[in-house]
Length: 225
Image 1 (cartoon, rainbow, N blue to C red):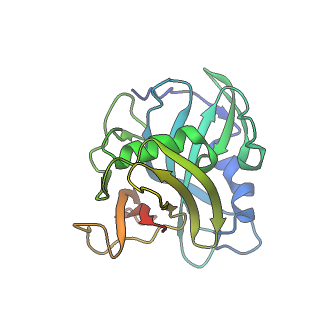
Image 2 (cartoon, rainbow, N blue to C red; image 1 turned 60 degrees about the horizontal axis):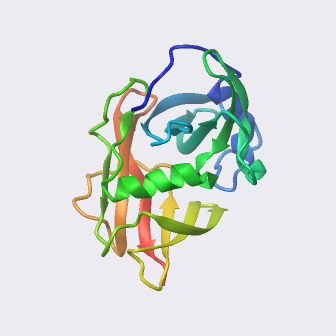
């Protein structure tokens, strides 16, 4: 179960994210550095207990209107081979020492747990409370057969988010695309089933700057032929 240490990180997560975000293809801001606040999210457990997994919502208030970004992060005690392009930065944790922090959509441990969440085999955890499930996070998959284990074939960042292309038991000879939404758009109504041609989705919430609660689709699964 997730254990949250009440300690310091130097630099903080938001201090690392502020210069990193403007270089992402899905970032909506101008040329200046974002002004970020942590607004919500949730965690997933690594069964091996080695990798921290967090789905963070960071709100940027530097522009004309607040923008809520979803930034899945993984925290590791050593560098992840072949993932230099996904490194957000390193930070000194007051209990665990140096941590390598990655854009989690490029980390195989996070992706495996996200597919397990869609299969109902992983339980979302509160972002800031140890050993506490978060029942506000909903996940569902309507395809035939389980997604997990899935073979990830490609991860692509684009202006609308990050697309994870994979093959799994649920796709047969074809593929599926897991779209991780990076810019979160609040839902007006909670969907009762995956919208349109979607096979599944993950929905979670955060707090807007005025204190009102918002929810959005954090990830959506589509068949990719």
